[in-house]
Image (cartoon, rainbow, N blue to C red):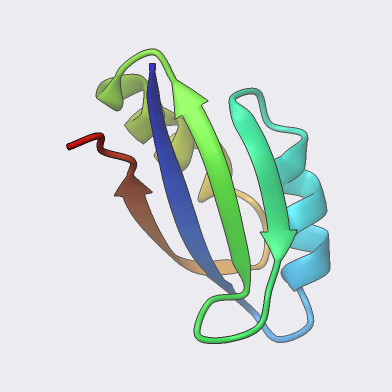
Length: 77
């Protein structure tokens, strides 16, 4: 299982709506609107890195109001 934090920038005033929509996507553990340089932080999981990438590109980045994402895979060193 691969987990990652996905940091999202949104259009002004869209953070809450984006977080609500993303929270319903399969594989998303949590989606929260936050303050700071990013507007929404998501924790997601998938079986493989490729599956995680497909989730981000095909599902998360397609949500209306998102301007940029940064995916940070969780590592256990």
